[in-house]
Every structure is written in C-alpha cells, then in structure tokens.
View 1 (cartoon, rainbow, N blue to C red):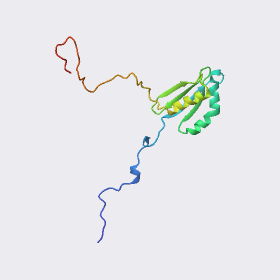
View 2 (cartoon, rainbow, N blue to C red):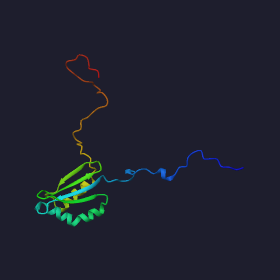
View 3 (cartoon, helix red, strand yellow):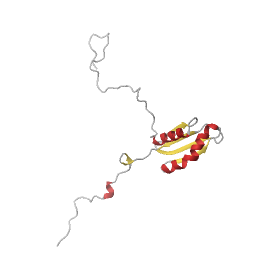
View 4 (tube, rainbow, N blue to C red):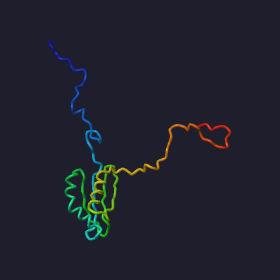
Length: 147
C-alpha cells in the first residue's frame, strides 16, 4: 500500500509574490492626473498660449497618456494652467508674458512636480535631541542650572 503524505507547508504560488506598484519599486507612478489650460480667445496676452495649444498639445497628450488634458476658454482673463495631483492638491501658473518655449517649460514643471507643498529649506529652526554641553547660563544664578 503506497500513499502520499500531504506536504507540511502550503505551496508557494508565483502570483502571491507580486507587490503593488509603488514609486521606486519596479514602477514609477506619475503624481499628476490632470492639466487644465485656460485662455481667452481674443486677448493678446493669450496669443502665445493659443499658439502653444495649436502646435504642441497633441504631441504632449501622446507623450503623457496618463494625464487628462482639458482646454477651457476663460473670457476676458489672463491665461493660466492648472495642474491637479493625486494628493488632492493643485498648482496654478499664470502664462501671460511667456513665449512658447517658456510655456513648454512651465508645462514640464507641472508634469514633473509631485503636488506637495513647497517647504522652505533655509529657515528651518535647529532642534536638538540632546541637552547642551554647557547647560543654560544665567548671571542671576550662582550654581549652574541643570537640565
């Protein structure tokens, strides 16, 4: 009588070894989800924006299939571009006064941005996790102050 014993452990299936996509782990998830171009059809300050949209928007949409592109008329107002991100934030850049190449740079800035709030790097206060080596000095105390 020959019979097989059941394996002591559960078999490891290949599908159980996969992980969810995350930035830096086999994949890159762009943070931008939507770009909205708003311009006036008549104002001269929107002329370069109209030229950019006419000449470059189709190529930009083909290069970035993960981004939704919306073109909206904004009568009697300056042209702007809005970027909407996965973290429910948005960034707005005014496009008046920019040439077509400047508009390209601003669009690329929004595409590459994470949507996170800009944090100042220069004015951060220094916080120590340990007490000072000399302690706190005061001319009013005879003995050194203990921390």
